[in-house]
Image 1 (cartoon, rainbow, N blue to C red):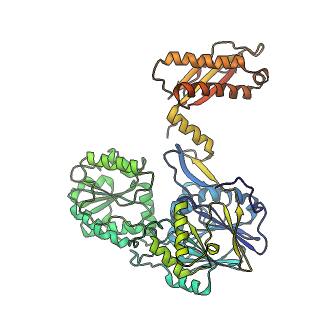
Image 2: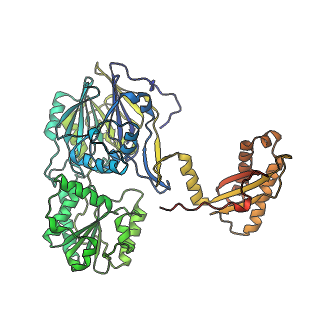
Image 3: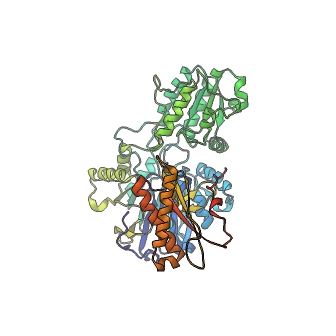
Length: 588
């Protein structure tokens, strides 16, 4: 987003009494990190609070969450978080949010079951703040001036809902993630009748999922996977290894049904898989006999054709259960000739290489990895374009706002609304941080922006780092580091010894020693030629030396390593240059 011009609204002050603000602080222009701020003069609450998973060019980052800077001036007015469903991109940022603002959270049973596990991991679980709502329930939020209604939708996780906000400014419908599945595995249909009722009564704004808007074909039902998975069970002579998303309880139900029908015992592997299945069983979202499961150590006790392994790792994640199986690290379980590996999931963009590597490793172990001869083994949880059109037709909002997706997805969704008769004034095309303002006289308009951004959660230590740290890590990963140490006599201000050069991960193809001499000469000359005012200021001198070394390195090698000049004074008690070591790799 371009923030070159100042924000149009005075974002540090609350809205006027006749105004409702809707502000997406994540989930627009990207997939993930979904979060919508609903703000009135009296109160503020969020619909969803999700995280974004890091890409390969963000090393050492565990997750990415919204920057909540907009909320800081209104800390005493934050009332609640309303959740549409339990996927990480809709609730994954809550541990960090609730640590700062421990407000009530509302969601359906399975959603809150997933959240409980996350919050217990962070030692933030507090039952008094967690509230389970039923389908079609209505509760008061926003200091009582708004009612929120949960309307069931079908998705790739149990208990997903759209949320309708009944406000003095009109009804706002947020679809969350959905598809219009006519044959859901659990029999829980989308509340289309209720959505039509809302449309008949009048809806001011519809915020609708754009994830699969580019696909013009009819949306497949989750039940369509049953035939393909049955084919896989029957075509596999040995053990059937299947990796899928651990939150897709409907897919897991189909898998367990087929395992029971085909006489196979099931071994679950992966912490999130085991946890989510346990939550689903407790809430009766899974139906299965108690004696279906076996432990890994029991697998060798059964013929291979009588075993099915259901695990995490469908995206080739390094720490997932599937990778441990492939490395032979799970006692009692080995993948061998005659087994089959099935990935019952889509490839999330960016994971193609790791998925290909996973399948190749399984093939080397002798497992079958192709889908030849099998039917459909994965169905999306997001509606294709026909579902998006049907949602607009049911709700018939005065104003349509595409959400959840890249700029391209949002634009195509807007074009769909235009093709259905909406003019430009009634298709509100927002980017992250852009403010939608509703007024009690019926006006709805886009008006300015508020600060938004991303916060990066560091792996292992669970604290935030900024983009500069990631930038440095990428440079270290690609081009290494060069440390130049200079020892200075504090009385004369001159060098007390020749500069020392230490490199790690920085490769010179020719003569390393000769190149080190070049860098040593560069930093020495720069020090001696530095203007007097720079020599007097240590910080300015360090930056002056850094730039000199960077220019030489870039000119001679076309690389950009991290350059760290260190200035020590004689008698300072600091370690001599020879004691400077490369940083040790943190153990996990």
